Image (cartoon, rainbow, N blue to C red):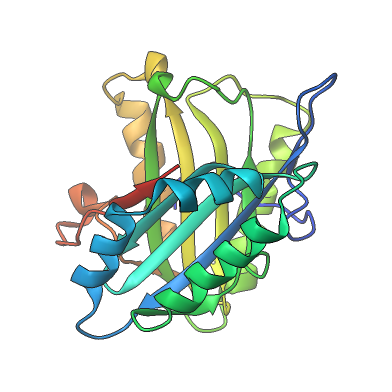
Length: 238
């Protein structure tokens, strides 16, 4: 769960507010559990989403929509244009999709119900060729969700009104059931560099402290711990 985190903003009220004709976007996340023996089918369906379905999602206002998976979990992140005006046919198609997927997965947390644990929106790049994704997953230890939140809130408070240009942008962390933690981040490629000794020491200190309140599902700090976790897979992008 990297070092830039926290926030006490209400659920889903992280908005990207633009002027003129540009839409106002809200960010939302959801978490699915893939049913036993169904992961290959789940992946196949996401790899073969019809253009009609994609267009319906766009009409719903969904943008920068992606679904990621590790183990039997699937994490969805999207930005939603609140001024969108989908037709009844669009809404029906979306409901039909959810119903058809129910034989391979089930919600742990529906869109809009995950707790926002951190945000660092910064200078978001519209051109996604300028960024690379970092999406990660952890399990918060019992009774430690508030401590996780508070540690990251301190980072938000320290940042104040600063709007970071990078390297981390469009960064949010979401939690379901006080346990399942997923982070979505867009790393600006122009900031890529070899970690300095000072940066390495700071990262090791932060992540070592975090291991007292959470366990990793993905391989983000395997370089530090020597553990072997899977890398998260991107299964779908709109």
